[in-house]
Length: 265
Image 1 (cartoon, helix red, strand yellow):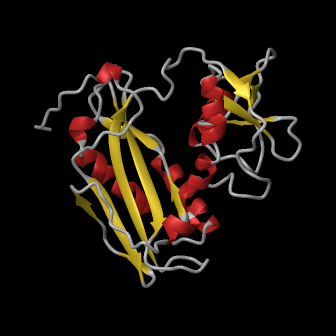
Image 2 (cartoon, one colour):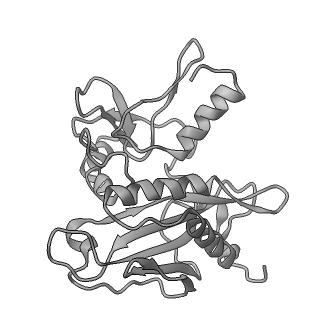
């Protein structure tokens, strides 16, 4: 790596920063093209693109880390790839092959290696793959063309306090409906969470907690993350619901709790 960037790694927030390259691939007539890295961070769409009118889109979020040995590693990208496939199926979009997804992420990380935060700073390289319905369509039906893109940026902790304790409030709103799109990582779920989050923030809370939409009696999810807890008798508990996102982090923590910490999970 020859390029260097002037970044205060230890004081990064969670916000957009343009990096040098992003990956883009297009689907048309039943096939994905080979994809390529580009420098342009803008996308041109028809005014009749499905994503603009009917919200046909999904996305992922994963990270690359610098290790103590100096290597750069991604955390379980195959699981993000499979989750994006599930989201695509839910919205009748063409799936991204797992190998293509992982290769795109690796290409983007390698091309933007200068932006990978150094080991020990607490910062990471956040990778954002997304899939959108493009083409031209004014009726309520799947798009005729699709765009798959992956970009990245260095980020700090999502919450300002990092790993420090933060306060949450229970909201009366629902994030997703039973048998709806809660288990898919689609933008509409997050758009629905903006108002509850804003109300929580105005009251001095970091975010809000959603109860199960069917009965409003059980904790289901936090606005920006899955929920888990550890009981006084050392049990690892996390909601089991079809309307929450199947988190890669949560699955990993369950594995750690069971296999390495001898906890009931």
